[in-house]
Image (cartoon, rainbow, N blue to C red; front, side, top):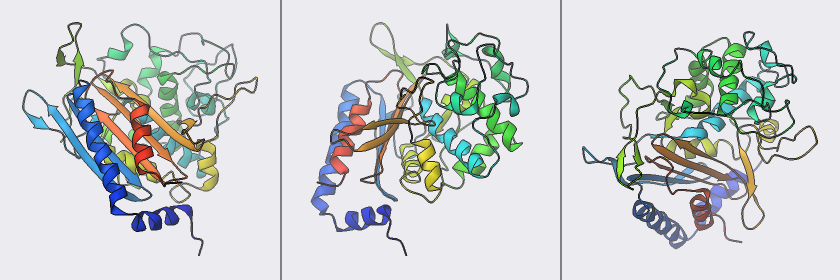
Length: 357
């Protein structure tokens, strides 16, 4: 039987001196307090090593007005961390032969207009290379409810592309709205049902769901922002049905760690699928974008690959990082718009928990 890297990581974790893990846990608690001191009302942090959830802890308040503290079950808006979650559904459809990533999007979304600048593929949308615009004006604060992922396409589908498909990297959550419509078309089922069936249920992400405004969702945090005077206030009400795939999900850091663990080595996805997700896309000129299929790609200070994504929502800031070499997964979330929480914080926790050289 093959003794894979995850098995090796787990064996090393089991043998690791407890003092090492206590140092890591101590760093988590220090960071949680630091983030509260930086002004976050509530913070949740989880760390995994291989398939093991090493730590999940909450700090501060999920609801200041009602005095509800954050715990490991508190659900946060994860913003663009929704993109790698959606990418997993896209990857599953590709594995099953139901999705051709290089087919024109009209193959799966026939109502989307063709563009004179060139052909848009699902792959280009998922890699921010389609030329589709991002938010403008107050679109980030949309309060309109959409019953289906096809509805939000009307917001941008009539606009000219910002660049020819493949010409340059241009970050676009609306591109992921189009991805969700393609997933729905390829599967022949509503997008949210596909996401549940192919990703959330198999990975036991029971605390991850769309942030449906009209629905009572247990453990959902209250959302905050800082006013011009620096004081905390409740963030404006928004409806995220315009961007389930790119920024509309609720989750917990524990669920995000489970999700990351499924991407450390083949199992939930095939090895060639992980390569698909974690290979940088390139422009038409051959320039790397350092973005794969729904994942940002980088290195730690030692030059080892890391995969990550951050998320910014109305009332939420999130970071997810995983390192296949060490098997460490880190997830952080807070219930504050534009919070002082960054990938540097996630990197610091990675350094505290990864294998020692």
